[in-house]
Image 1 (tube, helix red, strand yellow):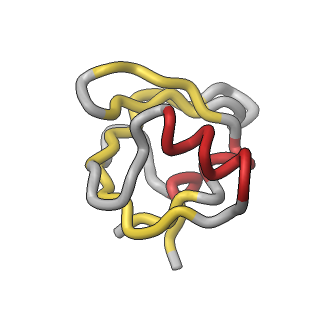
Image 2: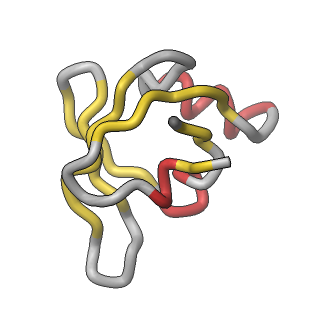
Length: 73
């Protein structure tokens, strides 16, 4: 299983599944990250947290622990 946390800078990944439950999963979905959407990793902070991505035409910053809940291919 590959997660968004493992995607390299400049690569594009497609969301396969969202892990997590309740409020955490709902918050990720509210940010526009749903099954089938493509995400491009733009930047990663020096210590690896947060990760800046482009999703649905806008830029978004995600914590490492949230990115680890997003399964991609």
